[in-house]
Amino acid sequence: MDGKLYPVGIQNFEKIRRDGYCYIDKTALVYQLVKTGSYYFLSRPRRFGKSLLISTLEAYFSGKKELFEGLAMEGLEKEWKRYPILHLDLNIEKYDTPDSLDDILNRNLVAWENLYGSDPAEVSLSLRFAGVVQRACEKTGERVVILVDEYDKPMLQAINSPELQDAYRSTLKPFYGVLKSMDGYIKFALLTGVTKFGKVSVFSDLNNLMDLSRDLRYFDICGISEEELLRDFSDDIHELASANGQTFEQACDRLKEDYDGYHFCPDSPGMYNPFSILNTFAKKTYGSYWFETGTPTYLVELLKKSNYDLEEVSHVETDANILDSIFTDDNPIPVIYQSGYLTIKGYDKRFGIYTLGFPNREVEEGFMNFLLPFYSAVSKTRSPFEIKRFVTDVESGDIDGFMERLQSFLADCPYELAKDVELHYQNVLFIVFRLAGLYTKVEYHTSRGRIDLVLQTDSYVYVMEFKLDGTAEQAIQQIEDKQYALPFAKDSRKVYSIGINFSSETRNIDRWIVKEA
Image (cartoon, rainbow, N blue to C red):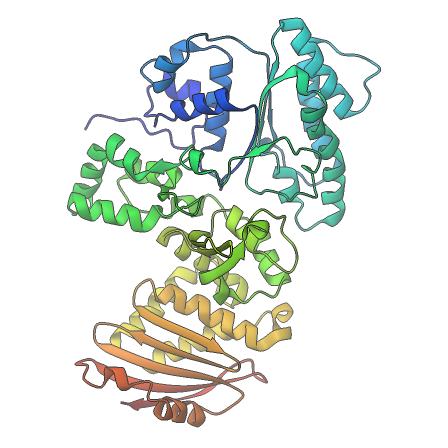
């Protein structure tokens, strides 16, 4: 045991380097970034290393050469100049009143004005910011570096309040506009965040920002690539494997299945979630680490408000305009993608169409478990247990047991979701069977007024047909007419046909019929 230090939750480059935490060397990319352009924007999911990237740039522009010893940067940078740095971190405030944004901007401006001077004629926040930029440059003789961490936090937190959104937007727009108006005084600027917030909002004046979010040159500037994982952590994978009774290859496969799969460009290699990987190595246990750090409830609000068919989430087709857009009430996909719950799975060059899907098992299971209590009567704490029991009933052939459990998932349909009963019951079934599908084999199809489903375990095959406001008899008849069970005729497992009727009056399954095929 070498007592390796994992920087779990540590976002400060200097602390990581001085205190001997392991660091994945991204400094060649940082050097390339600095030398080939000056205004950048980067969107990545939360806990993906954006703050660490900002902190690395801060150390670099502060001329802290000693922190880069042994890293790629040491052999690349020759000058090590020191620049004035304005670092704005919007991550640290709870934005729930119009004043909360003004307060944090004012606090930063006062600190900068103490360093570089102030001018009583500069009354507004944006004028003061412009003044600080100019004086910092004049006082130090070097152009200014501006680093903004989580630029969109105020907007995201106000997602359900159009008034707050408007207030924050009208504050941030002229504030960020300083990046353009003071161009001659600025050496470098990087803004990071989760969302793109559209061309129409806070960035509309900032057409000089180069967006790195889907830039193939920088796909791996945050996160861990497979190459880095095997290069820097092969000892850790060996330790993880032996702690879990696995071979090295099995541990690699499990890490890939659980935490890999983020594609930020159409043809880029997959990236691993760094937060989950570091936690897994530190604790020698596989877990839903990224998910447990809190899923924003605004996602559920958006899904409910837009009356979204969840089945679409597993194979969304969309284009670049939507991926880059601000969320809208009728399309929650941009925010779900930008927040890291969906990722690029494929790209059709001819039509410019992206296919999205869940990046990995941690995200899929976490997202579905997270949604279940919002769509069904199951409490948050019971959700994983109820799914476990459901799967256990399915695996042991207890059909009445798992059908009754399905009824309990559908019971007490929340009033606001009941306006489209069919969509609601499809959404609940989709969540339940998607979660069950992580442990058994599930094929799921929906069409108007019906769902057909095949559920396979080691011992059983269930061919199921759901009808809406029909009869269980009609559902069984459909299975026989369409010969849905035929592919399993020579199967050694027990095959059951189950016809199920869902009543919109009782908003639940009212009857099912089982036949052994």
